[in-house]
Length: 220
View (cartoon, rainbow, N blue to C red):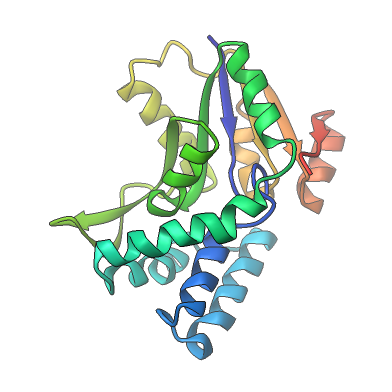
C-alpha cells in the first residue's frame, strides 16, 4: 500500500474553503461585513504570500463557530457545501482520486482548514481519511479555540506522523508517497514525500518545482 496525500484548497477545489466559508457567513449576516470582509481578504493575501500567522488567523476563523448553536452551523454548512463548494470541485479531481484508489493507495486529505468545514467536503470527494486543523468542542459546542497543532506548514508533517501512529501505519511512512498541493506553504511536506506534485501551483511553488524537477500538473 502506498500513501496518496491531497491538499484541499486551490488543489482539489478551485478555491479556498476557509475564505469561502467566511464570505458565506458574511452573506448570511452571521458576520458583520464591514468588520470581517476586509480582514478575511487580508488573511487570504497573507496565506498566498506565505506570511500568515496561523494562530492569529485561527482566532479569526474559529471564533464565529462559538457564537452560534451547532445545529445552526450545520444547517449553514450544508447550504455552503451545495452552493459554494461543489461548483468549485476541479474537473480533474475525481479522476485523480479514483486512479489512486484503483491502485489500492491510502488516500488522505490533509488541510489547514478546520475539520468542521472540510469533513463534508472530503465525504463528497469520496475520501474517508481527513487530517485537518481541529476546533475545540465543549459539551458539543465550539469554543472558538483550536485543539493541538494546527495542520499548517511544518504542522502538516507532525499531524500526519501522529495520524499514522494512531492508525498503526508508521510502517507506511513516506517510503512510497505522493502529495498534491498548489501552495508554497506546503513545501515542508512536499519535500518529505517521494513524489511531490505541484497542482496549479502558485508562483513560488512553480519555480521550486521547476528547479527540482517535480511534476507540475493541472486539475482545472
